[in-house]
Length: 261
Length: 361
Image (cartoon, rainbow over all chains, first blue to last red; front, side):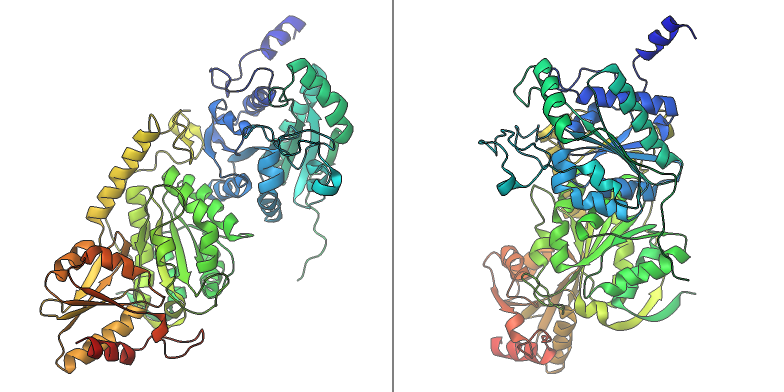
C-alpha cells in the first residue's frame, strides 16, 4: 500500500462514531479516546454486537459519539451493569465500559474489583485526568500531591488525603485481569500505542480470556483552567512523573493457584 | 395435572421464577432470605439458566439493571436492610423504564434490626427512593402466592416497562405449605425492541438507554417534562388498572380489619372466630400495596364506623388507610406492641386481635 493511500485511510471518520458535534470542551482529549475506540471497533468489525456502558462523568458523554447499543450506568456501577449485560447476551457479544477516575477509582472501585473477582470478561477504558471534571474540578483519588483542586484549595496533602491511586498497577495484581496498561495521548506515537492497547484489551474479551483494562492519562485542560498547550505540558511534566506508562500485565490465561477435587 | 409440592415460601419464590421463565438471577446472602439465593444456585444451572452471586446488594441491583436492559427476564431478592441499598438502583430502573422483579423479604429494623420477621418496609417499598416514580408492589399472604406473584410480577413489569416489587416477610419465607406448581397465562406482551443486544439486530440502528431523563438527547422523550408526563400517564394507568385486594364479609360489617402479608392470616383467623361468635367483622387484604386499594376502603368507610389496621410495625400502612378513609370512620391500629413476646420472636396472634375487636365493639 502506498504511503498516500494509507494516510488517507487513517483519517477517515470511523464508522462507529456518529457524525455530530463534539460534546467536550475545546482541547479536551476525551474525544480522542472515543475516536480511538471507534477505530478499534471498526477494525475488529464488532459494531453490531457491542454494548457500551457509560460511567458517570464527562467520559460518559461518549454515549453521544459511540454508535453502538449503549446504557448509562449509575455512578460507579458500570462494572456491575456491564456484567449483567454480558451474562444476558450470547458469548460473542462484546461489552465495554468507559469510566473516569471519580467513577471507577473512588465511588466505583468496589464494583470494579467485584466484577473482576466474579470472573467477568469485560473491557474497561479508564480515563485518568487527575480530578473530577463534570462537577467542576474536585480532588479524585488520582489527583497529584500538591495539586490545587476545588476541594484541596491549598494543594493535595498526603497526610490528610493519602497518595495518588495507581489503578492500572493495582488491578494488574488481580488474577482475573489478563491485560492492564497505562498510556497517554501526547503524540502520534503514543496515540498508536494507546490504540494497540485498547485493541488488545478488546481481544482479551473476544478471545474469552479475561478482563482487559487500559488507563489513559487524559488532558482536560479547561477543567484544569489551562490552555490546551499548557494542559498537555502539565500532563507530561507532572502526571507522567507520578503515573508511569507501560504494560503491567499481558497474559493469555488466568492462573488458578489451587483447586479441590 | 399440576404437581403439588410441600415447600417453604422462600423456595416457592424460586419455583415462581422458573414458571415465569425468568432466566437470570443475581443475589447476595442475607437472612432470612438465604433459601431463595440457595434455591437459584441449585436449580437455575440445572435448568440452563443463569445464577450469579454478586458481591453486594448494590452489585445485585446494578447487574439486574444490565440484564433487564439486555431484555431478559431477570430478578433479585433481598431482605430489608439491603433493600435500602438497592433503592438508588430501583429509582434508576424506573427512570430507564426497565422491567424486572425485586423480592423484599421483610425483617425487623431499623438499622441491622433483627433477622426475624416484621412488616416495617411498607414505606420504603411504596414510597421508594429519590425522584417521582412508582413501582407496583405485590404482597403475598400464602406460600402459593409467593410462587404466583413472581409470575404476575414479571407480567406486570413487562407490560409497563417498570420494576415490580414482591414484598413478603420472614414468616412467610420460612413457613411450609402446599404449592400447586402451575404456569399462569397472562396474555400477550410488547416486544422488547429497545433491548441492548447489539445494533446489528436492528439494522445497525442503535438503542440508547439511560437513567437520566433530564438529558433528552436520544432518549424516548424530547425533554424532561415530556418524560415526566409520559411516566405519569403510565403511573395513572397502573393506579387505575392494577389495584388488587381481597374483601371478606364487608357487606354487613360494623368493623373492618385491614391487614396484608403474613399478618393478614392472623387477622383472618380473628375474623372467622368473631363471626362464629356472631360479631359483624369484615376484612380488606390489600394485595397491591401500590397502587393501594383506596376506593374499596373509601366506599367501606361510608358504611362502617370503624377500621382496625393490623400490621407488624409501629404503624405504616395505617397512614394509607387514614388517607383513604378521610375522617369518615375511626381508624385504629393494632401494631407491633401487641406481639405475644417482647423480643424479636414475637408475633401478633388472632387472640390478641379478637381482644381488640371486642374492646372496640
